[in-house]
Length: 316
View (spheres, rainbow, N blue to C red):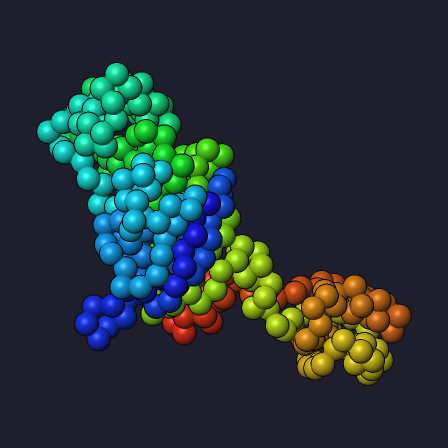
């Protein structure tokens, strides 16, 4: 269990992280999502002990990383945005070197390296020079060093940064496979990265926690109104009267084109109003051609919470 309580980091008059509090349970993937400068990397650097907070505490199974850094850090595997690899080493040599730095006992290093190679999917390239590997494989090498010693917690800063779509998929497939044995915390400013991977999303805005929930619940909470579009044939007056009579309907707009009626129906109800609209239209003698409900996407939720404008891609 990870417990972060009132975490704050100031640089002079600038507050980079502002009173963050959250918990993370075993066996789940948590995703920090936010624009550049939102405080994601600063928070992760404090969680790994590389940066001291101005205020607040970070507890790993009750251990304060500021008071018991060596014990707490043994529970953590960390992958910074740029994988800390040495290009002139082979994968195996680098992992043995990293295991020594992590103070894994000599008699346990070979097994630790084998396990890390296996978990990161590197058995095909253990004796290749890192400089000759693709960007995707270098990221896997970085992930494998984070896995050395089988830590309970993996903290990964932008793990898919610079990868092509196929490499991104491979990375996220690896993370989902690791979830059963590790608590995983990752960050990204790319919405699709988080949406495809995280069980819980933490949205940061200007160093503050703007929202924390599952992707599905975030969408549901932010969808305060629903709009249904109905295309139907029939008597316009009778159909409009029947739809307006539905108690859950707050607004109806009607238009007609080439003999087809189009109704834009708005409701503040939490439940889906399409069954009610369908019954009313059929009762009024209408022949329904199609009916759709407009859903608020996770991108819409993110933009609403952070105040950013919508772009044509999924980069936030």
